[in-house]
Length: 178
Image 1 (tube, rainbow, N blue to C red):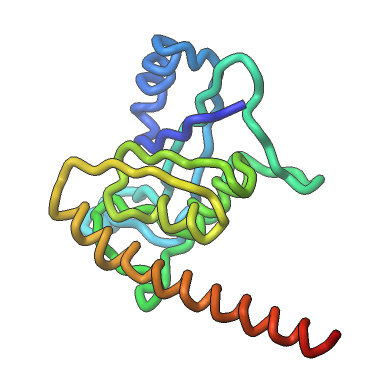
Image 2 (cartoon, rainbow, N blue to C red):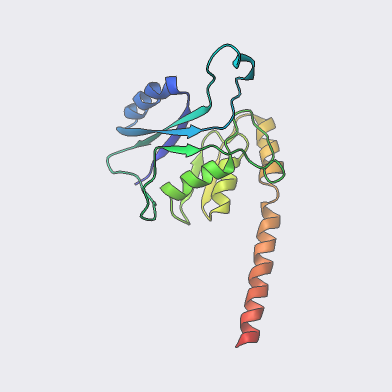
């Protein structure tokens, strides 16, 4: 069965869960992401600062698809920043590709489709692509849409060309080997 993962503040989790119920996503559970940094630098000398992100997994009657390879999956994940040389920073609330890839691996199979209704930087689409999933993304801010299309998703055609070239080289080797 399908799942919807909504990133939100800890305080907004109950609201997300209630909205989910209005649309027949009757069940949910939280996921926590642990960072090794905080965006609240200016408050660091005044109080304990936040270093977590939160999400809610919403699903209908059946538990969502769950690929755990026989290993226990905890309700928290490490939030590791993207390498800026590999993935450009486009959006202020951009999620790391590695975090999204892990969620996509757990909740989908290769060939499934991932939908991001607030695509922003396009990292979800990039993560889905790198894992062999189809994807659809929607973004209302034209500036983010254009930057995502150009910077985050623009080199996917190059990646495809390299893959085809490698497959062709591999097939040539197989032919020569026979």
